[in-house]
Length: 393
Image (tube, rainbow, N blue to C red; front, side):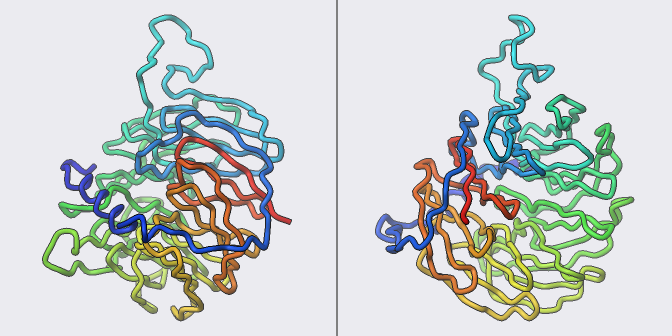
């Protein structure tokens, strides 16, 4: 957990670097070649408002799971948007009606922040209050435990574990059926970091994580022992801001290679088994990478979009027209690359060339987290809690 006011000041600095003037925020003209269709939309309540929250919906088979920061978790039918159930984390049993007058906590806020994950027939998420929660597929509370620190990203699920990363740099592994702690790994944090942590990834018997000190590492999932940790970026410069090297992006694994990127740092490819560096390139970001086949897509720290050959780090194309705009991470959907911005626009690019093919004005509250897809549909959640399902032919 960041215990000083410095991270709050840093957020402002990052925002100002991304959008320094209204003149720079003029959008480039786009002729819509495609017309993505809105299948349905739902209102999640207050959403995440102005908070820097990585709360993101997920699609699991024929169900959409989504949540608002205040505490409402909902499940919807994928094709129709009809709500299946709703759970209120602010109420002792998650029921839709108050059990007594003493249960009315109208001013309470559950501060759901850590995103949603699914596995072992359960839904998992965390909160800024340090709670980790498991719900059944039917929306019933299975367990709720407290960990030390804010849970700011989605839990990783696999290898018989639910692993959460806290703002204090700690990784905590829990049993998926009971919430019982299996192990804990503490990673030393620098004095000043971005407000955010890398979402852990469970793959090939290991837990892959990024750190606020600019490192990427792997823990043995069964015991939580460290297999290796290597630097993605090395702090440089004379000021605290210039020396920030947080690895906040979720690692990407393809075959035996893991890819990671750091803020004020670099994009690297490492051998998953050993941590040996395969290649390194000068790109910097705090947003998630996405991959399709042999190609990596990234939005850098100032809003420039790149396509990179994952085999050797060669740049295939760049799209600089949204530089200085505050963009989400990219997502690959069919033949397109989709990014959102802080003004509520969705930008659609041809993922082979980087050319714009459409722009949609969706919600004036803007987007902070990237869209999600199951291959057939694209799902976006705005800051004010509007949940929209889209589709193209």
